[in-house]
Length: 422
Image (cartoon, rainbow, N blue to C red; front, side, top):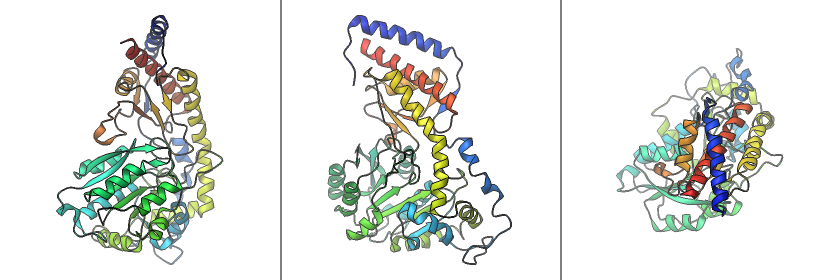
């Protein structure tokens, strides 16, 4: 990645970087790019939710949403999101506010009850492992750590996880029970899985008969360009390949409407849906159907979701454009960094020279710019190359974001040139 420099040229660049960093540290900044939270302006787009359902308490099918029951969730809301998430309405559940909660519960149920196709509960087996494409989502990794599930890193490519590695690992090791996937505008590098990757995931031979793909389609509707990316239908591909129970599909409205007060979804085969409902019936008498009704009323239909997400894009797009513009102006041609230019989602991945990410994050924090910890994009918080930094542009205002990215670039130049100077 680095560019060869003469000693004099390197010394000059290093001195300039040190001066720029002193100026940065003296500005008294307090900026935070740690999490991909919607900005207040994005949340304001759903303000109408707070006044709904405005006296109405009956769903389209006559359900009184104020009462118990209805573990499947409201049909009218499931109809809106069935196409978005590529799940038939009859195989899609609408639940509480958090898809992460659904992933947590799916793991717990797999540990404590027998999955369709399984020979025993996971908790009764000596070793359980999950494949973790890297860079990846830190909360997926935290769930594995929480339950003592071994994590096996798998390299990411421009088309998704390296399928040669995935196919080898799942075929030879019966302890490998699952793989984490963010298939569309993935967290954090924005990769979208190719049709071939989806087909190979669906059809591959697995040593574990109860292998599951945890398909976290968190950014299914979160486009940033005029040409939305579409991915292949995993559930249909699994059914066609003779593995109908292989996929668990997750999604939510957390970054569509009100973060923390949205609706989460689970989709899978009829057998898996029946399995999850039976287990959930022991922990809940039904989801928040009042909230589901207000979402159905607010979004109205799939076209309503698309229109709403265009409004979101109008707010997010300029921020992602600013990140790309500043990184190119400050780091382009230096050989000190590479970064992604995602077509959707919530993150930009910045790659710095090996051995520099932690120090860049530390220097940025000392200058008042807080970033996601280096290593968070890898299992156990360990990036072997110490090279990956996740940027979350969504929450700050545009001016604050520009200041943060300019400051981050200063830190990259300082640490990178210090490393070259030895």
